[in-house]
Image (cartoon, rainbow, N blue to C red):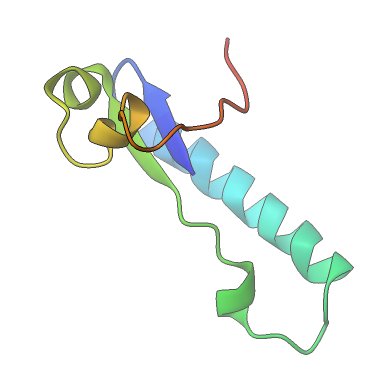
Length: 75
């Protein structure tokens, strides 16, 4: 999951980590209870406006010609 924000912050990282943990716990509850922790890890990266504009790192995927991201939520 790529989180696009105007700027990165420690508070945003904390919220993303809490959200990832909550989703992982629900997936764990719904799936096989004997699976390991790696089965429930959500790969999350935060990118800011500069990374998207410069198309660096994961910011390049947001406006990629070859990969169409799916927007889950927009404020």
